[in-house]
Length: 252
Image (cartoon, one colour):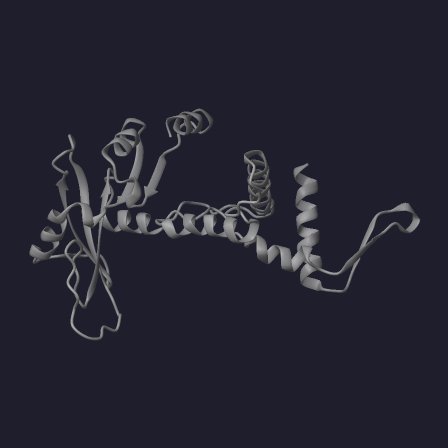
């Protein structure tokens, strides 16, 4: 992690770094690394490890409104074994789930019919709404991993040999990154960062590009010595192909 921060700092000077992680990274040492490297972070808090959090939510009478669905309260808190306190934001979201039968109580997580609860720890100084929006934007980065697994078989173990699996994984990563790089070259980025920090570009899945452009019937011929791709007439495919080719020629 430290090597990653140092390399990123060297390449992207004067840049504000942000990180959002799930409860698996809820650790004082991890948060100290973030703080020492001036990284603004949010992290999900595991209820099952801290019964005090459940008690704090159940005893809370007044919640501050964020919008029609979300409300919150916050406090400075730390587990007993930690040295430093952090900003903990307790959130609840109105649900429309249909519940049948009696409410099943949980020993570690607060349960009721009307709300889902979540706690976020952060070193950000922004408003609770901004922190919640930023943290909830993790779905975008999870989608990147999902696309890489589904569209380039990044989750596959191809061989019983380490070297073979390393080569296979590198090829999968290159295929995924190449599809993203082409789309980044072909379209301008968003002018500014949004609260949930989505990608600066709107990406098509590699599977979509594959079906729309690559997996199509065609023939490569050389009439009069000039390499020519002949395909069935399709205006949308022709437009996409010419757009990518023109952009790549300009970039070269």
